[in-house]
Length: 308
Ligand SMILES: [Zn+2]
Image 1: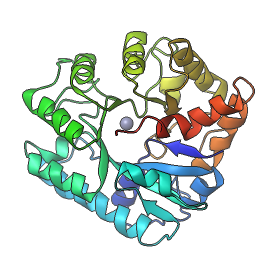
Image 2 (image 1 turned 90 degrees about the horizontal axis):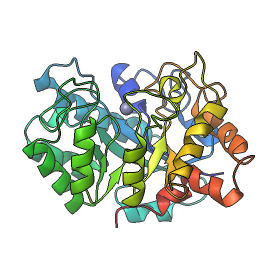
Image 3 (image 1 turned 180 degrees about the vertical axis):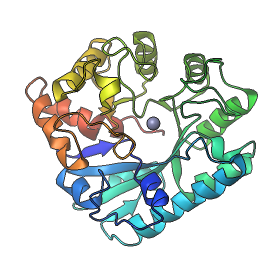
């Protein structure tokens, strides 16, 4: 069954290792090309993520370097990978092709310069998360004790996302900022978040947040990170399905998708260690849901909730 995965950190690993690893088959990459094929991934989002400890003035260059790896190591070397530059292109993928989407996880790298954001849109960014876990000039992340809402600058970015038909990603955003986004964004999305009711972690969404997203026709993509999945020592596929189940009870059956976070996580759900294993989740879901429902979670729901 075709998979759409809204989040991975392959670009960060390619950039950290300065291109010394191969996207095609490096064991270091949970979501290398061979594994994406084995897991039947049809569309993979590739996040630009800049480590928070970097000097502010070096962050934009680092973002451009990650984009360079996207173009040279992922696109140029692999004919079967198609760069999705706009939403209409997701419907024109041929059999055997994998769509690749650039996303931005946190706007720290643009500083206070919207021109830099414009450059990233031109390079293909189709989804923008305002923050990672900490605060920046746009908003506070879930790890910022202040927990403030969006700044004027953050609100400007949401308006530009709306105009560009770009998602505004609420994963990682502090709750007050989340509610600001819900008020302002035409295309909100949670690209990699689970349910706080099932697993009480600051990165997860409350029922009120999930319901607000569903009411706004937005998607929630569940994340394969054990600390967000289970409060136990280990996390299983059944634990992850509890989150999907719970989001369904909140009205999200047609608005749930997948956002693995492969290559951004150190711990793994048993049986979901790499992108090659997405179908383990699908097979387990098929025991609980109908074929059409599972096809929706795997990617169909996302394709019906694109910014248009
Ligand atoms: Zn993340």
